[in-house]
Length: 123
Image (tube, rainbow, N blue to C red; front, side, top):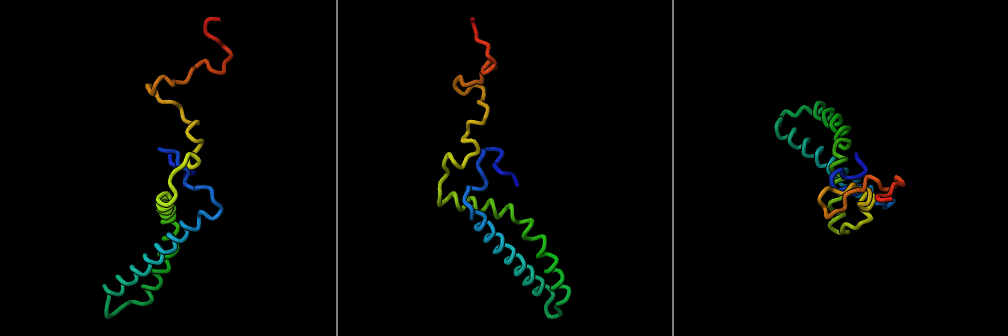
């Protein structure tokens, strides 16, 4: 997963040592809900002759990739929840915006091609 959003440069980790716990919790709950729902649907569709061994092995196989594949979504979801309670600040943006190239036409802030080269106009 990327460190920042490629569009707005928002850091996906807000810099606290235990920040991952929220994403971990969402991922854990989602994985458990997926397994329980899949088991319930499997039992409901095959009732009264439920293939218990097949259902058990199928759920075990689904438990392994499920949390791994869902983790990026859980991390993004936790970031959205965190942004609701702790609004965005400049510290949450990669480089605070000064690392971005100015866009042409944004009020004359185009980058000077001679800046830092030692050349001066008219001398």
